[in-house]
Image (tube, rainbow, N blue to C red):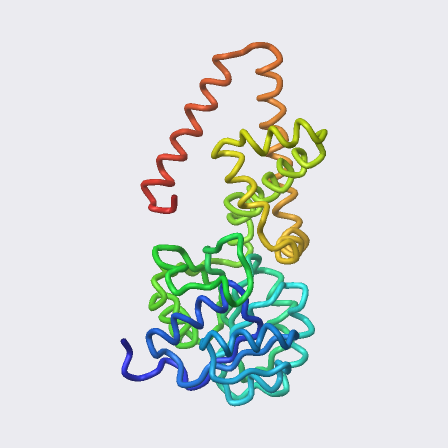
Length: 295
């Protein structure tokens, strides 16, 4: 446990799964002298206080960030512009502002561009989560053995970047620094497309006739259950992700559609060799994911 807090005052703007999990890490390891939570819903911040994951609550983001040396934005990305406008005048000199959003390039326009010159902007993306949301959903082990990607601009203060990286390492994450546009391309493949497919497959099952739909639910195998788990993720968050990362998602979706067309053609023609070769190649990818300890 740390004897000296990493940060004197930390402000969480939003306190869902990711924010509440990180707040629990800070509580557990004594990483913050004070934790302040802001949310637009009174019941949310009341619950955060009841859970003991913060010291003070407020409905005002501007009030929350006063005298904070670290601000963590944990809200849907569609709220970033308003949050930036609200907090910018209240930020103290030298404050570090970071976020946990799943798309990084647009954050420089929606959040970073509105911040004062005396603030350090270090965008972040912890690649961790469950299908649950809200302050009750969090747990401090969420980030252990997972990646957190930071995408700071080239001229960002290195000390600010290192302080954010050290926080995530303390939470158990492995930290990587990446160009924001490259991040968005990579995550379009590894995260955004799989979620889009899951939403589509579960939506297809929903549109089936009642009798067939009930049997699909009754006899669902582990693969379909995995899709339903993914498709149960926060719809507001994923709506924003697809809209913010639309170019990268559409590009990878186009490539996926071409590959799917080839497989449909192979099935139609009875081309077993084509199917076998494709399945063998993708099986190797699964093994590499296991070897990377991300399964």
